[in-house]
Length: 355
Image 1 (cartoon, rainbow, N blue to C red):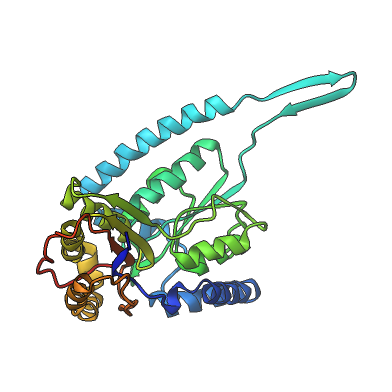
Image 2: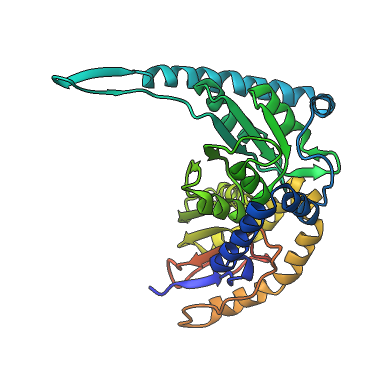
């Protein structure tokens, strides 16, 4: 049975890996040459921030006062449990030994913590407070001497107060108002009187991921990460709301996070195309930070319903040509429908498709 694509997302310049790689490499080369000067210029250019990069003790105290008590309690709750697990994990691994394999030939094992670890905490569109807890706490338990935390400036006052609170509470020795490639370059090259890190951890967008890939070898990294993605295979028995929520739960990680729904039920496909944009509009941070972007996205997908009707009515049609979508679109979702029978339900009145 032929596959019918109800919606396809076209490739945009922002998803071109080669362009990303070249741009990141140029920035890292500049940081290697001009260090702090280049980093401050990048902070001003990308985050409109001209304040101090290193968060002082006074600024940490000011940030802590801005954090809601519920957030503080949640951070402390999570930190306590992550710390306990890390402590037990360390005990299970910390089995130093030495054995004489033959006369005069000794072999053994010792686990030694690195001197300096860099923790990147995303904080651009969303404040990833939990990332600070998960990245910094294990390093502290392991005995890392210096833990440097970097997070993008939220406004003229610097990084998100919740992230600053979490980083400080979990044991970061240095907190920087610095994001993106500039943060990775700074921690790699030991800028702002900090020692170069031995190891880098933390999630980020495609530019952060590419920067970590490039500096790997000079420093250690946790993993080679790509964009968050999701694919759901469902039939008519699936809970429609859960399908839509599952898609949005992953796609909100970034505009280039791909998602797919493969279904034999056109009713589910129609519902998902209508429901996903609604769920996106209900995300509070997205509504605040991407108001204009959402409007552009809606305009760009306004005619999808007409295309959907035409595609489903064309006898023997196998696919729809890709449609160009707005760059502000949070993700690229393909909704593919495999009709179970000739008596497929008529299309609903949805007028949008989420990518």
